[in-house]
Length: 340
Image 1: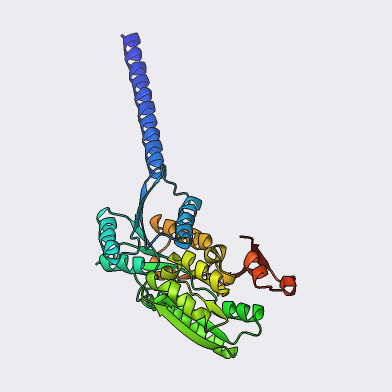
Image 2: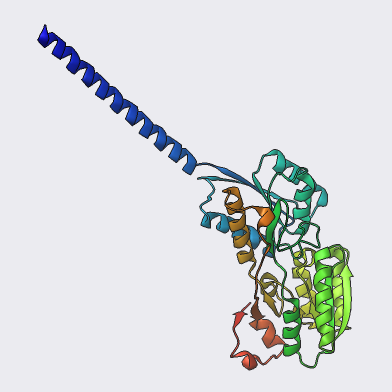
């Protein structure tokens, strides 16, 4: 009987230990599953782009790179919902509604009209919006201030150093007397930049001739008119003109008219020079900000608008040679030359 009792006791102990081991193993498996699930959590980020042209396309590429830098990659833990309005305001509104309905947890607007469309369709301000390349966020009515946005919106400003561009143009053409300013009459950001450019130009003793256009259809004729009135043309960050840069370059070439745009891609397309900010880097910073918000690491209300502190001087060497510009004076400066 004693042996029988001992056997029962040992059996109970063995069963208990086995059960405990199974319980512990189950807990570990559950913990692994939870961790694995957390690591594979998919984030849905919606991107609305105003229109396709090289500058905005580079920003979108940069956004994808910035998201990846923060560990969000398509096919792994990121679902990227992309819409392109192709410059149509009604499409921007419809696409904004679609991105909201698709339950994107963060929305990104590339260019001011796209950002405004997203803002108009997030009625309760309950979806964070990240601005991708917005020149004047406060002036566009998107934030309370660049330092303290105050609600559901933050992002990146692409405000170019327009005063430096005008100065560069004057340095390259010291005898210039008149500067033309070509921009879209419907883009508020462009008017904001032109006002700054005018102030600098007048301080340098230049007469300013403004030529706003209502659409790309007016660009060719306007460039022809400017060629007979000014010594060079300044173009702000303007989506309408950027979309027509091929036309601008064709007409400027015919008229032997120097063009100073505000973005690198437009120098590559035939502009003479600029002091600009890399559109790709603007996108990368936008993507980083969007990822941090999606992961809960930052709050748009208290995240200041990111503004690049310094531009890069970029000169199209082919254009410089065409205008017989002596570049030896720039040997000691940090300049990037484009040869096309």
